[in-house]
Amino acid sequence: MDQVLNKVKDKQNLIFDSTSNSSKEEYFIQNGRILLEKFVYLNQGQDIGSGQLKIFGQKDIEKATNNLDRDLVIGSSAYRNVYKASIEDRVVVIGVPLQEEPNPEMIHRNLTEAAIAMVMNHDSMIKLYGCCLETSTPILVYELLPNGTLFQHLHGDLASSKCMKWIDCLRVATDAAYALSYMHNALRKPVVHRGFSSFSVLLDHSFHAKLSNFGYAVSITPGDTSERWAVLGAPGYVDPEYTITHVVTEKCDVYSFGVLMLEMLTRKNPGRMIRGGRDLVEVFLSAVEKKCMIKMIDSGVLEQASRDEIHKVAELALKCVAKSRDQRPTMIEVVVQLRQILDRKDLLRVCSHVG
Image (cartoon, helix red, strand yellow):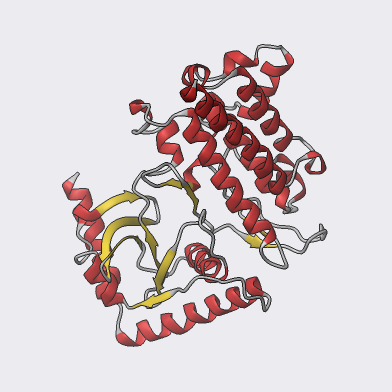
């Protein structure tokens, strides 16, 4: 394992070491131009109190990661290593690309995330503190969310601890719904996430959620269904109507959010199911039709949630995953209904303590 990590570190050091001053300037100009174009396209001349995005140099990244110290790696993918680091007296997360050559897909995704951070600023969206434009693929610097992803708590290493209660799930769902609703409504043109899943929901110490992974996000013209988009998104969460028509609307996110609610109710992994040839939505719908939905609900949820809550959340989830996008609610409507469920649960808890 150490040999593999050493090779990865050597490869990443090569990325930094082989970058000459002229190359840094060239990358900075190219990446900066793309970032500005994305910012202008998203912003449309609006000022909605967007966040500040700091531009870091390559040396800042090297210093923050202690020259890419492998002991600071807290996650990895096929494209990058993720480091827990310190920059300007702030604990952050830094994603450093593995490839030496420019990766067009990652350049586009990272700069889309940076542009969204410049335009949008919401308590339930992860804060992007800055980025480095001097490398072939821009490097992003995020705030650190210490409680991992929702996926980890539902299916991964943190799931076995059973520390995530049903009330936490409701709060997390509400926070994520607020974030999607903000993306859809804050600007003149809706911004559709397209990559929403339990991987993209990060949690703090108090199980408050923040939405992340905006690399697939697109700005759309309301009511315009003429434009066609490549089908992107997390397997198991992608709107079937979108896969057929290649048309992106806000209802693509609504569908993905509905899948997430079913995932929280059942604790079943939509991605693993779809890879095995089964779809969580279809399986759940079949259980409903056979009047055995309750058998699909996770035992922990059954212990902590009332039957009324379970039916209300399931009903809302099924509205979100309706086959036709026109039959799905807006994210504003989803927020309202989740808030009502959550407020009622909080009220019942207070009354039980008083009693």
